[in-house]
Image 1 (tube, rainbow, N blue to C red):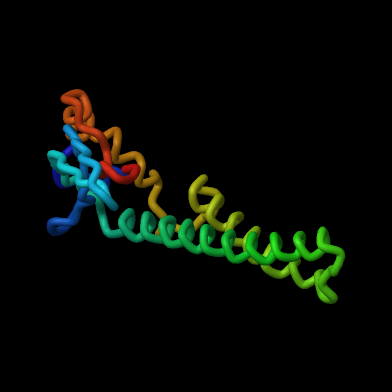
Image 2: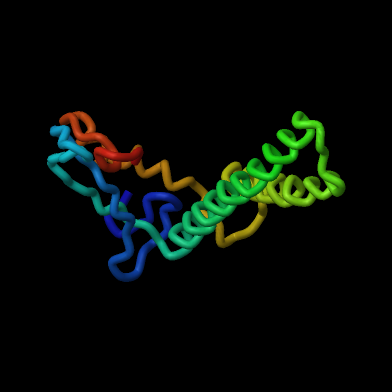
Amino acid sequence: MNAVECWFCSTPIRGGRFLRFDMYRNAQYTPLLVAVHARWEQAWVNIPRCERCGFGHGVERVTRWILAGSAVVTVLPTLLMTGSYLGGEPWADSWQIVYPWIWTLAWLGLWLGIRQHRIPWRRLAPRPERHARAHPGVRALAEEGWKPGGPFGPG
């Protein structure tokens, strides 16, 4: 593989497009009165990525966040409705809870279709963004004890 080829689809890249893959190691946490102070070493690997794969990864990421928000908006009224039934005063229009469930299930289907490459749209990336973990630069740093992401969240 050439340095000017996209890591995700092997097409030539024009310009300096890349995915910045952050990594960290040697995280030290110091508890304070109301917070935690952290120090760590940080490094990153610039992984070549074409415009198409960048767009496709963005579509997957946005769909995932909308699905997560939709799930929260669906679960809250469902819990309230369940509580009203258990309390003995059911909602008069409880059938309307179907609409947020249909919305959430539609976003789930769209997200799964994008993630599993079942949607035949040519603008989507052939490999998911997590394929960056297999990049030789990332694997070399991982062998030295580096971890993906940051010390407060997954990579």
